[in-house]
Length: 120
Image (cartoon, rainbow, N blue to C red; front, side):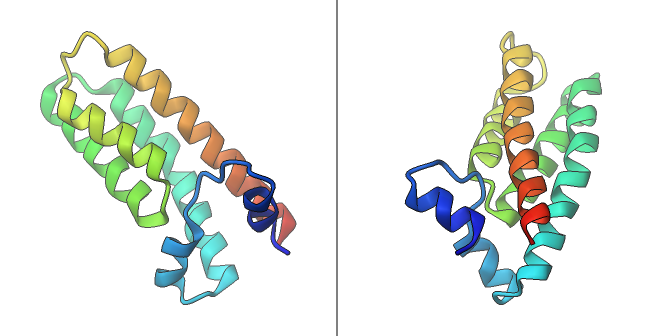
């Protein structure tokens, strides 16, 4: 039984929708992990772009990029937070809260992905 199946059956939250991801990887476990590792590797750069955004356009591009890549791998909580940031805009007074929330969610996803790679 895989690590995420154990977590799901134990009632633990799994930050990646493996059913969604498997549609794109055709149930290829190695490819699934590779795609997830690519996401985990790119996420800090995208987060840095969000943090460094000096204007609405840069903010929108970074939030939109994160939303799309998170959706692609089935990281729905990250995608939702990125979408909220994208809609809220760069000058929103809650910008720091949005950044903190996204950072926490990305850390959870990255930790989970690291665990999958070790278990593989």
